[in-house]
Image 1 (spheres, rainbow, N blue to C red):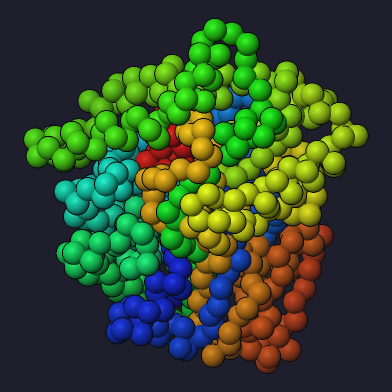
Image 2 (tube, rainbow, N blue to C red; image 1 turned 30 degrees about the horizontal axis):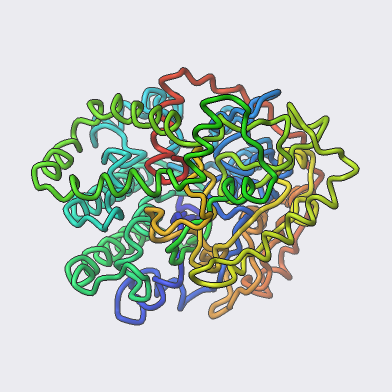
Length: 576
């Protein structure tokens, strides 16, 4: 029996790149899907980041209904953070609903989710799975051993050292580019081989395969692909642009092969969790809050001394990168780095030492005086919380003063001006206007999203620069609000252009296509404008009362597991 629905999740895929490449004769599989089906932008979550975006996709709900708004949650009663896990997502996933509706599923590599209880089908966890726990994230038991006998150790992430990717953009070191692209290619090839093997030996109603590598390539190598980026070098682009496009051509060929191997005439959906665009400068929000008087520094000698150094311009931006640039140009250093691809452990201790020195030498969030601070950022991009009394551990803002204080801070953020470029022109969202649901208090009070301009709001553990604006943030591409939606199949209207779909709309649309009712607590809608009229006449959209959310066992992560997850997040560029 052929699958009825196939979803390919391409992390960070954007029409900004794909459409020009299609017009130039590349990506024939994706182009055929677009020409024979429906397509359009797919609006992401706020913030437009992997977490909570894929969770909004898989639940059809906004972040305040599922309890996560980023890669971290605060530990109760503290300002400390811990990495989120799949167990933190409170909503019922699409695959849980499909299993309950009698549909057999294959869910491969989707991050931050878990297998349905008594899963009918196949499940393999995503890159958030600690390496030592991968067997626990594969269902049915014993499947992982079969896969590894056939294909070798299972790959959910890149084999490159996690600190390698930033080297690609510190003065744009070319020596690691080819190795990095080959690593991305190897990850994609491995996962498609496994997916084809699984489809060849079993029957499924629904199949989803997630791909991480496009996001990785676009974060670190956007300056090669975008000739308007300030770091773009035509000579470098001449050497590597075609190699990067060749990765996408091969990805496109794998997508076409998977669809053909699945057989039948399924509904195929290609979706991304967010788009992508150029980023050239950073905004250090904690430095902004400190300069504006919203943050206070502890009154202790070490903190006062680091605060003085910060005011004098002492920070990672002015010291660490300049110190790294020259040694990283030495050939013997480059050779040693490339050798480290097969032996990462030797660098872990050094990496930890550097993080300790970073906090010891530079002003950091550990130096904040919470009893005198009114607003703060932790690790999530552009997410600001007010230090509200009765809600935060050491809150000082009277709840009655909250609206006025928040509105004044929103005005200041909207008026932010870069001395070198002019007004930032960021989107600034308030919690009450953006989210709704049981977990509203866990959401940021303000979401500062400058992604439509070449800025990235950096919430670093250290205060990067007293000047607020950071000239070199490492990554050259970052997320945009609009990802992609391409759909083709028996019930999809050929040539339809979809203009207003969001990530939350995909789960209810898939449920409807598979003949199941949409739970009435979903925020998303069925994207009826891409469906054939006769299909809607024959089977109108139906709704059903939502069942209680699943009770999931917390995944207890050891210190080693947490360290592994944090290391991957650093490699992704999401924490420092």
